[in-house]
Length: 377
Ligand SMILES: N[C@@H](CCC(=O)N[C@@H](CS)C(=O)NCC(=O)O)C(=O)O
Image 1 (cartoon, rainbow, N blue to C red):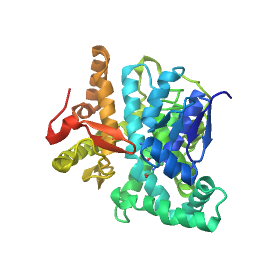
Image 2 (cartoon, rainbow, N blue to C red):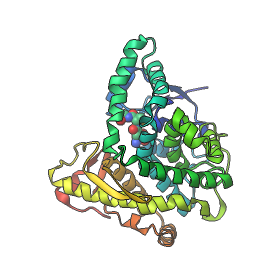
Image 3 (cartoon, rainbow, N blue to C red):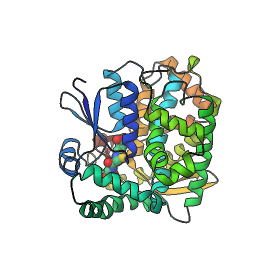
Image 4 (tube, helix red, strand yellow):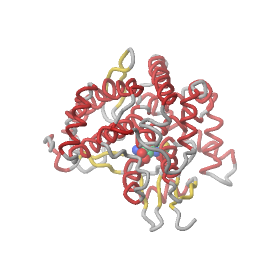
């Protein structure tokens, strides 16, 4: 293999599952390595601004971070078997599914891993110690993982609104969506036909490392749903560059339950997030990284309501979709708008997000947005 990319990732990492599926499907030459403790905390942090995985190092020595941006860039370098459909409605839906999988499923991923620690933790500690601390005495690496990484991740649960009182609602939502996905994958190999899309890649993040691989959710949530289980396998072991999106810009009817969540639950999260960000703006400095979590959002979920802290990064991802929409030729934009109106999702296009930029794992206000000025094209 000549000049491979170096993919710093890990089996236990949510977004690594997404990038791994992409690199494999596209047949992009790469070598996957676990970053050592030093590489993670020193080299990667210096190169991309945060200690984070996944990170990709290209053969020319460029470091790349953030799976959405990495995929967008690699799609230009490797255009064969594009994961973003060429037709406008499927492309827009694929981007919505990427956002939904990446961000809206985060509470479920964290809950299914960390609320079932007794069953899941041994594998997590095994992977983290072997992967990030090779050759270290297990007693030492185990302690660092337990007191450092695991404690930090468990600390996300209350921020994401998860506790013993709220967990049953999240469980009900998760089962409902997993059933709908199982029904869909009984009829289609991937979301939009026989080729994996950007939307499938967003979803495989939570559905591989956390739900599909951790022992408790794998046994209780994924394996009992055979079509969904088969999709998880297909996504991690795809046949490179195979398959087609459905003809005629069609969206299968079986996607409707997931689209209902996108339009009736995720869009209200984004609307609530914009209010939270605007409320905080007078005290925020443009160009400076925002806190990872900022303010509260509250939105409908399944049969109830969900409250959690806002990740401003989520708004940055939504902003990218809107920016891409605004670049569409008029005909394509009209088709997307017509589909959204018919599907009850037009409120997505009305989101008035203060301009954000990405800085590592976080977002920052663009300088032009300071003093609460609106910035809609
Ligand atoms: N949106 C980023 C998310 C990356 C991310 O959150 N990675 C996790 C591991 S799956 C991480 O390194 N987290 C470190 C932290 O939260 O401080 C992407 O798509 O690449």
